[in-house]
Image 1: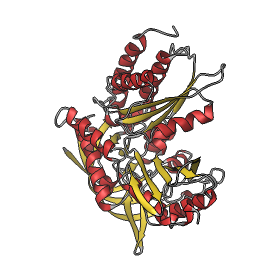
Image 2: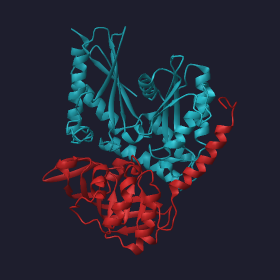
Image 3: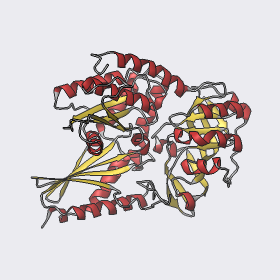
Length: 196
Length: 295
């Protein structure tokens, strides 16, 4: 198991291979649909994403003292950000994308080109992952996007994920889709063949 | 005194939300444990499934949401004839707002035209209530919290479907269901559960399909041919190898629940409600002011 610490270097990211389990330490930003659209359209980013991690997540947060506490924070479906992701990686130099379900060809190409990896967190494991968040260090776009879509700056410790897309051209999700597609074809061809 | 006034329904429904959002029904948790044990030790699939079980135990202990997408809240009510359903709807809205303030629900509602957040989670048609009146002395309500990632994977087919080679019979239905599972891959947080309606119209089809998700994983459709189809699709879908989160593995589905409804001669819909592993469904039955927790 590899440990990754913020700021994430291109060298460390390019050394990762699909299927490896990693643990992340340090700063992580959340961002989902609203933020990606905003950034891909050239909108200003209030934080430096360079050498950083962008987590596809809309957390459950509750006020605590002057700040916030994250109660639940699992990943959201990354595929919705596919139209924007490559542009965000290129423009902002993000090194780690964390989400669930995998991403497509444009993101994969951007990962290879710019030195970025896609990490799968455990979908739905919101309580478990929230435990890895040590504190909330800030929030942006809270008014404009709402709490769920806002950009949260988190400090994480030992946040576990699996490398799904690496910089060497492997995309585990595409591999599973292709192999399951072959099984599907066989299953569709079996049976009484009604409708043929 | 009408039954609905015999107790504080806002308190009862807030408690129902707390139980639903922070814990899985025992049958689902058991199924995840069985699935974890079926994978090779230390495989990625086993580790992912073990994490889902650990997450469930943690959320239950902490009384916090087990998934951050606390979902669409749908209340399925069965009430005595003549019940004041508006009062119950009001209580459901108040309970939803309270649970949101307490961090049991995410601020999960967007005003579609403005894009603004509806921080209370209460809006027109939100939460959703479905009422059925019956000859009963109890009020029974089941809550389902279904997340958006899984809802996005729900699908509707109109048979015949030439591309799938699916005709207007159960063999055609089987093809639709397998295709829907394949298309969903890990996007809907596999391993999932399929709720299915064969027939009906498009709108009612989705409601009937979603209702099937309230059935326990271990039951079978009363019609033998549907029960056989449920078993077959479950077995075949788990041969696809999509696995937990779409990263490969033996368990892609935890259950398949199918119902059939009458249809127009011109229409043959197959409607699929895809539910993620975080299958949050719980109920309460209130008789004479006494609550019995279900699920």
